[in-house]
Image (cartoon, rainbow, N blue to C red):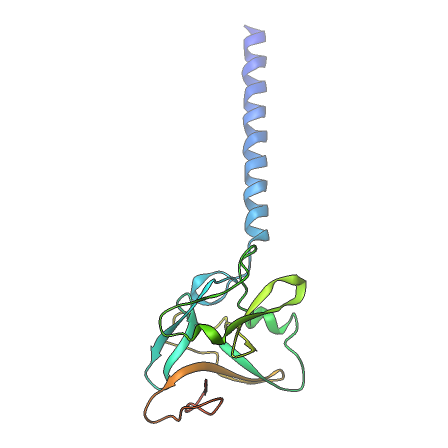
Length: 176
């Protein structure tokens, strides 16, 4: 009888150890997951598409989240900047972004980001998300900071904004 009780105690200890290891592995995988970027909760995208913005017109999105370009300021977007402005990266193993609905595929490209990942570009300009955004219908990332001016990428301006290569697309956007 005593031997049976010892065996059951051993099984319980083993079960607790397995549960502790599983919990530790789960916590590690959450900690190692990529940071969030906008509503999609990812720092990677393969397809760049368009969405309508009532004020600006047709804007670029990755997933369902607007993307931005940085008009250079006094400093390059560094690791601190990238916590609130994560670069739009291709997933590991993917070398070319895909043009979604309304996107000029000839303007899509890549550049090598810190760490060797490929960052998506449009018309030669690296694309970024804003951590303030939750959907394409409410872009909140337009503005200036010490890194420069952040602008939405507008592919077709509304009639009140201008269109054309690199011009202003109303408040907060740049037409391509």
